[in-house]
Length: 422
Image 1 (tube, rainbow, N blue to C red):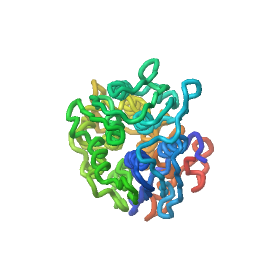
Image 2 (cartoon, helix red, strand yellow; image 1 turned 90 degrees about the vertical axis):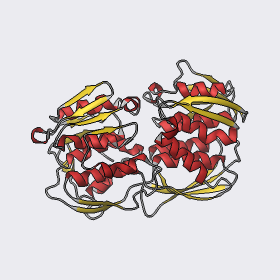
Image 3 (tube, rainbow, N blue to C red; image 1 turned 30 degrees about the horizontal axis):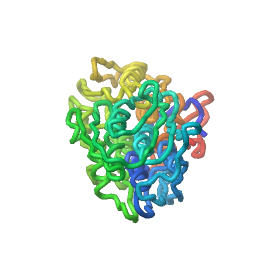
Image 4 (cartoon, rainbow, N blue to C red; image 1 turned 90 degrees about the horizontal axis):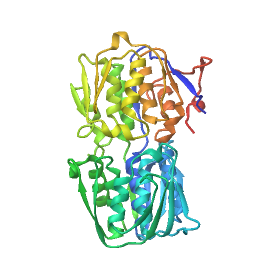
């Protein structure tokens, strides 16, 4: 088990590595919903097995779907999942007096996708999560579901919420993706089963990367039974790509995504960093990885349209500015833009607050491979999407980076078993 505070020791020399990463969280959780709605048994191969996908799987099991999970010998944090689809029906439901409760943790995909799915059931369902999940936006999705005729009881249009499922019902709704494309994806995943027409609004709504992923997945999915292969997670791969560039090392990614489904598959094309990168149109979660690299550029780098980062696992814009500043980096935050200035010569180690955000932990771990004295609080938060991340950093090349990861309080070198975030 990971200690509460760890220190990453910088690598003394360039390395050569060929890294593997677990399956895509975004594709796995979408595929789980489609499999539950399918007309036969679906086998998902290469599915991510982490906190977010475990939350979704547990919720589907609680709803009555038959699910079997088997280990994947090729990747510890992947699995094979077999789901017996119920043909658009939801097997279980609760009552007004005793709602069927579904816990979503801090998994945005689970919270949004399940909200739409359980409308197709018969009964009352209660969605709840951790306190941060109760702060995250839901209003646009709830508004769209109400347009379709479903009743949702929520004090502030956030979680916790009681959703009254009344089965499929023909209708039309409009949803904005201004705050999150997950609202549109949730509706689209369930639209065929629910007989819904979904109109998207918002800037470049039809081109939104994650909405495009959802549409392509729906088209490709074996709805009457069969197998579906989940591709590797491009956002997770970005950390190793970044480390390769930062350390001037030869780092490859096995089975790097070759489709255009994941916007973050473009991350390697942004190395070295251009003068400006947009969160909305160029990179998604991996823009955080790019921000960590920006102090090593030879001129200022502007990161624009970062508004969605503020309403995710933490307020990521402020968190990145705060923690980079601790490390001696000059960062200017203005509106929805961060400008990061070249700071490599004055950077220093610091104790990094990860805000219980897996991406903050992984980003600053990569910085620790270069800068001495980077200590991470609550590193175990990587369990959300990449539980064996630190094991991969510590593994000897070519399977890893050979990084030394220490218990910060004692300086004790941590062994492989202690580096898994369970």
